[in-house]
Length: 116
Image (cartoon, rainbow, N blue to C red):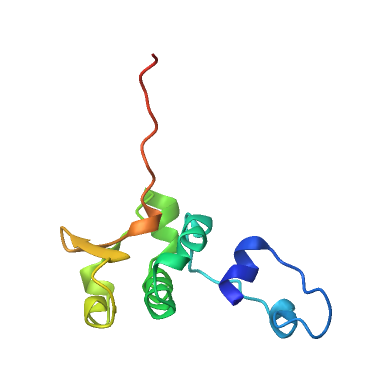
């Protein structure tokens, strides 16, 4: 609910709205998502637990490293535990390649470069 509120930049309708108590909370920090809207759009395909794990590991990435190199992966040495033992489904939001954790919805699809 909080993630959806932040991505959609929702405003509570009244004081009884469930997001009202979180609206004035400052969630600013050094963590980042490149494409939070894509994750939110595809959230129905994954359990809430898997999405929470995805967000937790995404928050471990260095924002400074992203600004310096554009790297959106998480190095194996920066992970305190194995994310795959906690995910519920085989349809993974996360995958390992070259000792780095990759995030499914952070990968940017390549644009078509040829003209027809």
